[in-house]
Length: 465
Image 1 (tube, helix red, strand yellow):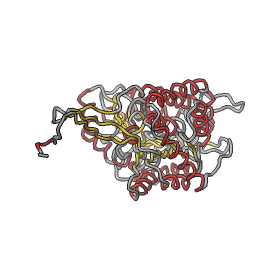
Image 2: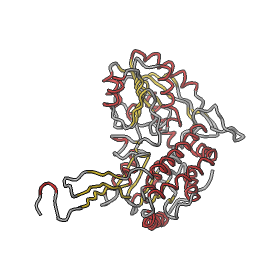
Image 3: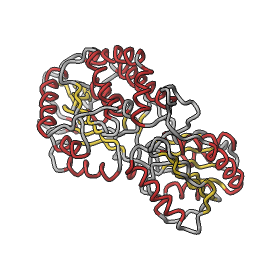
């Protein structure tokens, strides 16, 4: 598809220096003016929607419909950023003393390093993370995944064409070593999306500094919980989308379907029938036209393929797991295409039920009571997303209050992110700073501002002068 530079240490430091210089000016631009750039960016992206979608599909293997949806997601984030310029940027609170006014205002942290993943090369780094950071007055440096650099490069050109000043939006390229260089450079905050193991390393790097903070979204073992009273056909559709969109390589992909025993047999049959009929292959035909029959494309690279095969072998070697859809490698231009793996099993303490697979690999797990279903969902180190399929509001409320998750979807699957909502998880899935609409929580710090209007000095809490 193309050749991209592997940025050197000198180039990384050069990007940081440019971002620092630009920050001194950019933070003093009116917040409204900073936000107004995103009206133009949204318009430019809308005009180039099909171009961006095609590149996303070429880089990631997504089917074209999913790629169009990602471009729409980026446009929505740009529109949200534009609108947020006219929303409050702090809080007015009462003081203990009548002579004083008290405020809490947000201030930009400075240079924001964004290390973004391959699976959403446009939506996450260039928009979910960068757009709120820029509106708040920060400057950014993005290091896209080496598996999908082209889309982010195009996004940088989009920001340039919209007229952003030089140094405000910067891109470097490279593998994990380049990301490590950026994380260790003199930046003020790191937005990271990727594996828990890499995220933990980044958090340790930040902990060695006095000022550097992080917001990390680090994968999941998401699930759908299907109850006896659910609409089974809707539940199956939700589960299929949650499991197999983007080949199971979404952060929130459900590798577990936790199903109440009263509908377990029916659900398993319908799920297996649909999964076995899914088309996987190249999202484009030989002549370059879109292949609308493809539900999902290849895994991103050999490492990702080998990881899925590893967990598939673990299932095959365990006699307690009953395989009902057998995965097959599909030879399509030598790519990493594989059909779904679906199996039935009781809940057990085994790696393939508790660790993130990141591929089309699904366990169908029965349960009896509402409490047991939630216990099974919570019995992993992750806590990102959960789909709750039930028509009982008490059941849904119990799941909402007791599932360890950052996102809970009632009568939906585990995938339904929208830009004006927060996106993030708990436990091993995140460190408390979600992205998308709530990115501003991570890229600003709060200053308390108190004004004394009195003629004399006075202290709260009854303290004397």
